[in-house]
Length: 483
Image (cartoon, rainbow, N blue to C red; front, side):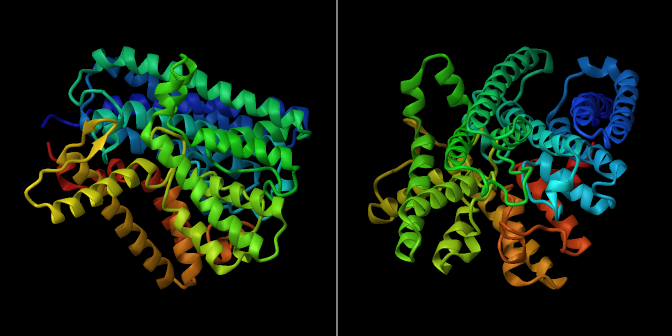
């Protein structure tokens, strides 16, 4: 195995930091339009980030023509999120909005991983420039996730995600780069169009322009950072339904959005994952609606709250219009189960992903048929194509790793003194990139009160869940570092 190309990784790091600094600078005009209190803090953070990136970029720029291997791909995926989050803490720290590193790190990782969990106890007192940066971490992370899942991970064959791409696994950088750039442009345009469309519709509904922009960034990225302490509960029914619609759209595989954009509606609508994704949402909504309605909630409110919370949790957005912990026990338990569903592969949503559940159900059905008719050879098909045994084993292995990490993280949380509900809810929501959890970290609470160790553990869960587990765990394998 050839030597790990460190210079290429440094080059990528420099490029990421340069891009991040530009997004920081984009917050400065908003700061000046409002109070201007955070202008110099954001400017200084942007200069530090940009200068650091420029140095890394200039000293290694010639290495861009080198061919990256699988190891560089895995390392770059993890390094990008870690480095962007590290420098992303600067606006919070320098402005004093979040004065200590542990909390600033938690908030920033939560943003870039589009989790939406927060340590802020009073969002409405935070300056506009910092709130915009907070929302931009979502938006940048969401776009990065799409590119990672659709462009990068398929070439690495990580965690079964390569089921959804025709990218070859052994292809030179010079051959793949034109397709990467073309793919990035196409999905970037769709991403921006969805964001602008939501901004316009929210503004029409009476939401202030600044709030519309921040909520659109959070919705399209399925993040969940808002500008109000009560999340979406204080807004009108119209605004809530608009956000429901865009959460649903953002939880769909972005390749289907591309199909629709070129007029191939029929092919998009025939997608098995899309149908199963819709069916799961409708099933959860129906059951919770019945529970709420039969316990005295009004017809419209029961429907709106159940639909909003189910879509919010399954797409891993994390907005809230109601405190589901006040619902009957069956209702909030279903919400907890929904935290393990996840959105579609190739979307900005996190979690286990709908496609994996679909393949697992098909695999279980195949096993039952094989048991009943041992002489007949059965297989699992997806869109008419046979799924190989290696692909199914990869999906099953992902499940096992996901549950192992969930179990041990929850156990560690309880060992340090966090109660059972808060532990399992905090870990589930962090690994799924959702936002609110159970216990003391529910939809009307925050994560500020948790011990420092718990916050660092949950940020680890956010990153490992967001990066599809394999892309991060492989870095801890001794074989990865051997020449």
